[in-house]
Amino acid sequence: MTPADPRTERGTTQLEGVGRPCFALGKRSNTIRPKGMYGVINREPQGKRKSRPTLAIALLMLLSLEKFVQHMAVTYAFQMDLPGTRQFVRYDYRIFMVVGFLVGLLFLLSFVLMIRRKRSGFGLLCGLALFDFAAEFIAQGTLMIEITVSFIVASLIIVLYLLSTKNQIAYVHG
Image 1 (cartoon, one colour):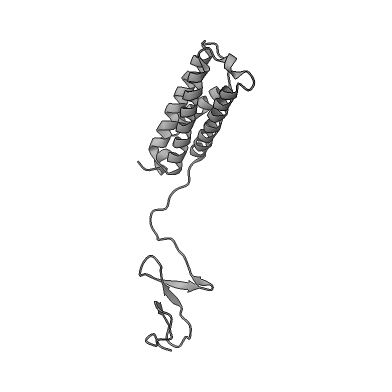
Image 2 (spheres, helix red, strand yellow):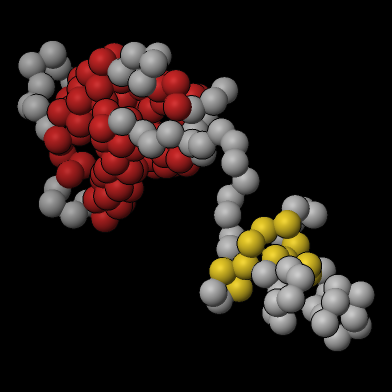
């Protein structure tokens, strides 16, 4: 069989004297790729590879998810007044419920932006952590607050963000 023979597969090239195709055209381009034992080898185009996030960045991503879940749980607790949560805030609980729900959605947005490697996700996360940090003082109505998980996680986010230099966050683009 020769390449001009109509019985050969379309889009393939054969080596002289071999009865089966050994190269096939790639699906996305006209480049010739070698066929593997079970078909065309799917190789990603050679180019800029995305780097893996550092431990600090991975922790920031996990903490943003934790803050989302926490804000949704607290919003639900305010709505249902589960363990008497309404009595622990100094001001009207409905304000904290609405603001907490919106802040929770923004924490989820920051996670999505970080997954998409957008630098704005890290800035949003840090801003929300600062807001959450200050809101804890406002909610309890005093400077001598009880240290809660929300306070600890917000503090941890701020510290991790400040420790992450521009070189560590450089794996994301604009």
